[in-house]
Image: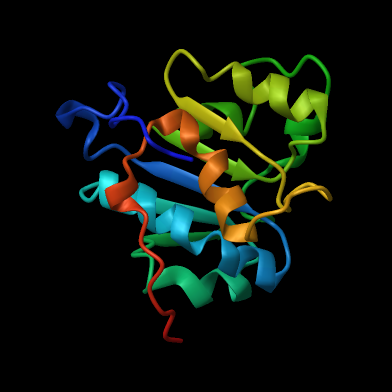
Length: 166
């Protein structure tokens, strides 16, 4: 459960810094991230939100989650993140360094991906989680995505399960 107070990392000075969401999963998995995305949006109402994944799927959440822009996986040269010993100045790391917060429901199973994103920890808060709940997960899948963002320290008040209108 997400019971702690808002993270000290989320101060007013960061309220308008950009946030990147990465999700390359199926439509159903993407839709189940909606409560988590909306919880982050409620905590960072002035921030620019970009989402990276399959653009046609992300369009389903663009208006509802107030996403400012959509990037296809082809737009963001993400494949270098799967290489060993990626130099911090090599793309896409300089681009990614411009984000205050990166939440990736993509690449969690790849050690190089996680290590390369860790190069950004001095400038950005990074959360990497699987795009699907583990096999033994016994709660609703949307709870898994909310649990994944628990390092942000979000209050229960930001968790709202409202209807999605497409």
